[in-house]
Amino acid sequence: MKEKIEIVEGDITKQQVDAIVNAANTSLLGGGGVDGAIHRAAGPELLEETRKIGGCPTGEARVSGGYRLPAKWVIHTVGPVWRGGNRNEDELLASCYRNSLKAAVEIGAKTVAFPSISTGAYGFPLERATKIAFTETKKFLEKDDRIEKVIFVCFGKEAFNTYKKIFDQIF
Ligand code: ADP
Image (cartoon, rainbow, N blue to C red):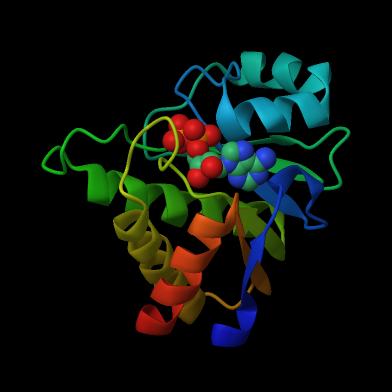
């Protein structure tokens, strides 16, 4: 199980994987942070496609092509906005990981890269989010062996160090 997980520091748009996950917003029309970076790197065709998809509720996931990205697909998921922790944020974030991995299996993606969903503009505390990311991924990989590699892409040293620390607690 553990061998299927990789933690890297870097830019998700550069990852050579079958699918990258986007921390999108419900409109799927692009935004700041990782969403903006993915749209810039994929090119305008991505927005054309996500416009047709027509949005995505929080906690769910939708698939598009990857266009100019090295990744063949983008799995767009919408994380919860942090509102103090009592507004179902944990469960919604867990759903993002579950539904993204489920979508990856459905399209036949064997390698998937995740950003740290909700921990930027949406304000979810990093350690708490990282525990959820690992717990859900571990549960998923235990019951479904079709995904070969999950890469957690950390944007910056702080996120990288947090991921490394929490990894040892969960796996
Ligand atoms: P959210 O709205 O879900 O919080 P953000 O894009 O604001 O989404 O932030 C999510 C995470 O993505 C943050 O940890 C941020 O540092 C990270 N991030 C921003 N740009 C990139 C990138 N190019 N590659 C990987 N992660 C990124």
